[in-house]
Length: 83
Image (cartoon, rainbow, N blue to C red; front, side, top):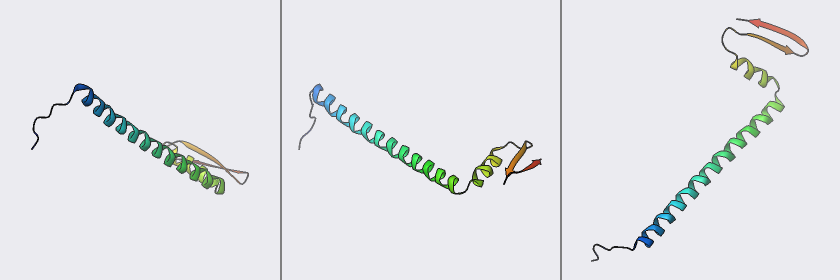
């Protein structure tokens, strides 16, 4: 049985650098995966908006604060609504 092994400082430092480098690499990989997923979601949303332009107006209406006036143009005719 081996007990109380003391490694030189250079070996300990090298081992710590290796673990740190691996951890940083994994963190960068996860960040890249999250960025790719975000871009994929934006691309899908863009395709949906291209296929269904009315979705953009619905999203705009959802984001308007309560009590604000909303004016929408539907098929060239203007519709107005106030809360």
